[in-house]
Image (cartoon, rainbow, N blue to C red; front, top):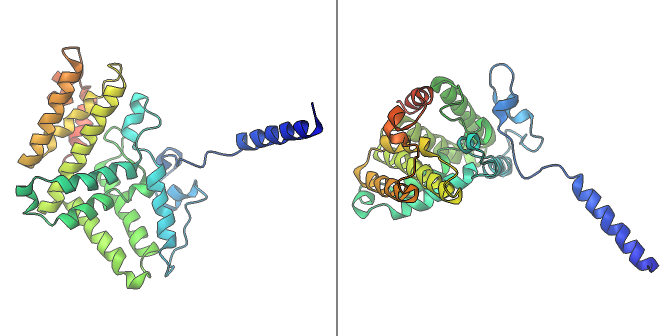
Length: 275
């Protein structure tokens, strides 16, 4: 072997060893698993050295850095079923925003569609710090609301309060609150789109699972859709799912305990989706 070849191999081996030593920088773990005592924003951000943006800046860059966590933090509901590298929170909100563009015309004529698209992109923003809390995580609805409202105050006040006079932060906070209050036609529509996006992802994961992955527990959310136009989409999706299973035994979460959902899970679902 020539000296040049030996030198090249040494460099290649060194590069390989260097790559092995690089930590996992492409994902952010759910912060809730490591917090001891009452939840706070500081505790939630404390485990991630890249997530300590400076507060009180007149620049939006600290806020932009925080948004990266939405790209890298996973939606937690799928993990219980062994889906480890599933969709991120940002993945979910992005498809929702595109779905609003295909709202049935008769429904779209009654809504502020620009606001709906913004609401889709804002509604889970608090999860950048809080993480994705699912119905079976044992976090009460009041506590979930407290964590999310505290986080939105931190984002829109602490990070955006001095950016352009704070107007953008105030607008984001107002749209988030409108979604949470769920009293306007736009918020009802976005809540329904949120559920349809989940059902879409459920069906897509099941198909890739080739009949070995039953996510039927999630079909429960279809019973919580309120707008007639969106109920039609849900019915089409569930029909598509039934065709996939084609007579094979599977869970039907929309039928509750009778459909195969564990009683304790059904109780937690009811509490989670109650107003």
